[in-house]
Length: 263
Image (tube, rainbow, N blue to C red; front, top):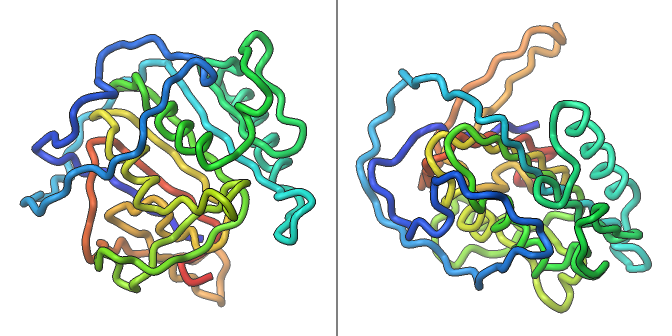
């Protein structure tokens, strides 16, 4: 397994503050108006690391986007991905997350049902490319310092050539939405630009990606590489490795991935 994180705060705010850092009431997913994705501006700046981070007081606000795709009745069909999302939902609710339309969105391709009282058509909760990109924007919208966010994806992952030259292996990692054959895949660049880059300082995002090629699925600047001593299951060494082109955000982000990039 791989763990990626982004703890460093850049000294300059490049994005337009569309998501803001004020105490904005969270909107139900079906009422949220997404915007067409535009890659954020990027440039190289000096970002000295500091290890002295002040504790962040939790606001008590929690929000989650959960995606499970079985690709039912297709050649790419999987088993258990929808169940994964449902199990994660149950785990989050047991640990203080609120199961309503403003705090939790579940996108699945088997009998998707809007939250009670949440409204919206059933098709609004299918894990299509449009709905997933909308969900990424919805998840971080209105977040502020002290908020806790959770992202889960269970489904197919893949890789495509990187035209920007920013990836060390020349490949972008992707996730496959339900309609990937028509709408295309969602790259790690898009996920980072939609969900990681806009985060306000002091927001905690935990992501769990259970799919192939997910090692750097959020394009975080540091990767925790585990080195297990096979002679003892309790003896585990690790090292943090910085990406060749590190992309930082203001948020506190951790990714738990089920596979390495090449798997």
